[in-house]
Length: 321
Image 1 (cartoon, rainbow, N blue to C red):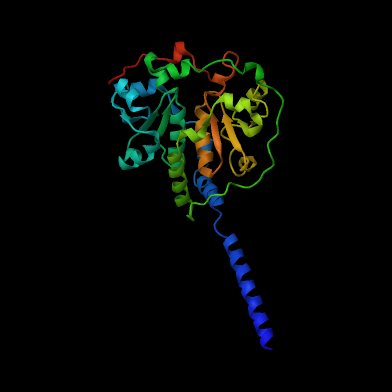
Image 2: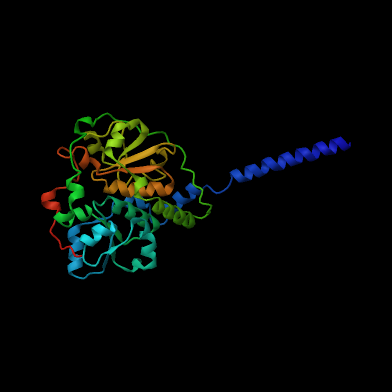
């Protein structure tokens, strides 16, 4: 009888152990909570990307002393050499902290400016994902403001990969699971803040990749062509899969077809929209990167969509020191 009691107690202890493990497995699914939070009450922010402002509109507001605040995220040296009148110089990784500490939500428009518009697109994507609705990144960055600050675009457009683009269709992957998040938080708002702060801290360097790197090893990437069906049919990076802008990256469409075990390389026409998208996906936990300069840097002469045109996109707006 004594041995039987010992055996029974042992079985109960084992049962308790496995029950405890089951309880651990049923803990909060942070990624699911975050996606549901972001997609509730007003739709999905990723479907609003890109949210840019033209240099001409920024300049008009400067001249008119309109309700606008400009954050320039270029290096301190480049900022000192010439910037938009009234702009403040803030490091990209510090923009969220600066925005909140200075109550910038009270302005009608907060403009994020960088060299080419791509880092600013990443910053704006994070701010918008965080819920701030008055932010815009300046189209073409400071390249569109003045000829003396236009070098990033004029030196990066080209046709290096024009002959490498293909027209065969690659199907989307089967739907899987969301990435695994471990912020330690349980509600959507808290998880969101933890993730946005983490992505700001890692920097745009983790969210960008060159066309040369991708073309050199396409099998290493799940390549997202963020274009319309018609433009995808015109030509795309080998193995790229078409995802329709403003439509394809929600939980009820194709978000879960993105892999959680492979780097996602997103590209668009300019690299600016894809920077928004990469920022959003990184908040969700995907290893997403934006291909710099988009197809402007791959097949400039023949490409469909938006291209940087020096004769019309570079202005002679005032730079101050």
